[in-house]
Image 1: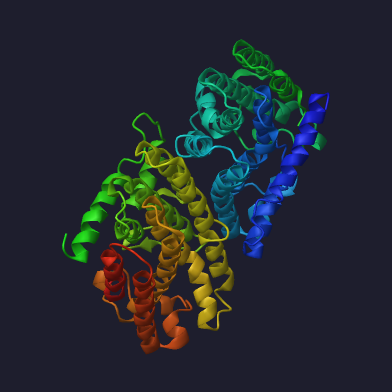
Image 2: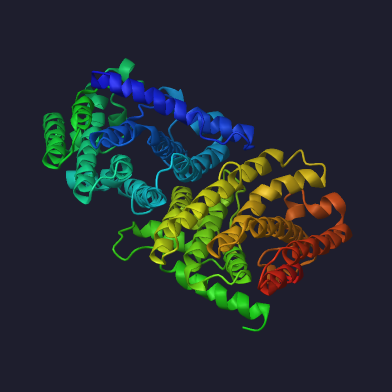
Length: 298
Length: 298
């Protein structure tokens, strides 16, 4: 595992394996529900959030063996949010990553319930599986509390509401940033802090992980908008210029493409400095991921 | 607080007060989201589940002061499930308890997100507020784990899927019971076990609370169906015979009204025996609630 691509690919597969065993063996779950949950869990996600969790843990030399359930739970939360965001009442998307969205395959009712189930079950995975790994109860409770705060009404869900409400009236980059800080930033920040908590991070390190997370989260979002203009449709799995065609307010629309490219660089640099300034015994993977995300093509 | 009606009314108000303070003071939440969450939280629910939680705690002489956050969290889970069940893609209901449903007031997107927010935030309230009350971390984790199991894909959400899938093909009472055990029974059982856990119940007592819960849950459901036929529209807040008009498969439809009335009595009796057989130091409220539910008129 010398390169960051190896690291991402190896742990992406480990998370994938973990996601295949999220239910206790004796549980009876309606077949169609389990199928709908699996469909979206294995629809080709990049597993960026779980990878960040693992990298944050590694930066503090934490115990890799106990991190996978937390990483899987985070991916479940991310997946539920995508299923609900794609619904006809929300963004009304038929495709995601080149595949039909959940409600196009299973119908709206099952898609809503599959999302509810993934959200609820993420808390089971965190509380049950981490206990089995003998992570102390206090530490697990930190995760439960932070996950519900970052993913709830003040965090991710609140960001989605602001996004829908604000879509028409955004006229400057600060308004757009405010939305993204919650809609996508908060869960990224939690992903990093979760790794930190399990590795026993101190307050300064947790703060640095949060700051790093908001910056790479924002850079990620801007990079998304850039790729929508100059990306390769083949690699993206969706048509370019889809934002422009759907009249979405984007970073390039507000500040232009060149300023966007510059901003991604600057945010990435600042994010890396947050980590290097705090005392992390083994920060290299975190720093490499920041660069990797900046240079990604899909 | 001599009578059970006093008990229910007093603790109903206490839960109501607790629900008014579910957010930390410094949280910023989109106004429309908070409004939509509140609308359904305060839409005149009977607070039956929180009352059961408190009665279970009292049956074991547990500390009343630390139970209210758990009780509030359970009501939040119940409320989220009603908001999502009422959606056009699900039961498509315009009214609940005589008031417009959430999506009729706030639109479908906000209704979905208000449900997501209530579900997520319930875990915050359980983990954060119970810690403040100095409930031991292990005990809180028991609650988090059981709540996610009883409310998730194997429990309440699974029951809702079975309900939708099975609606056409139900031909006997066992199929209907199986659906209700999860759709409504599981959260009622959790409500009771939550009170048990916080009061330090032993395994036998927890088992008795679960068995009691499934039975009164079923009795409650059958009583609902009975009231839909012989109830007072004024007291019910909805027209009678609405089940028949919507072609819903109900207990009276399957076994007739008289057998239903008999079954409610029998289940209530058996439920009470579950409690009297196990060793509860102070079981009177639980027993009274079972009778109260059997005789309710709305």
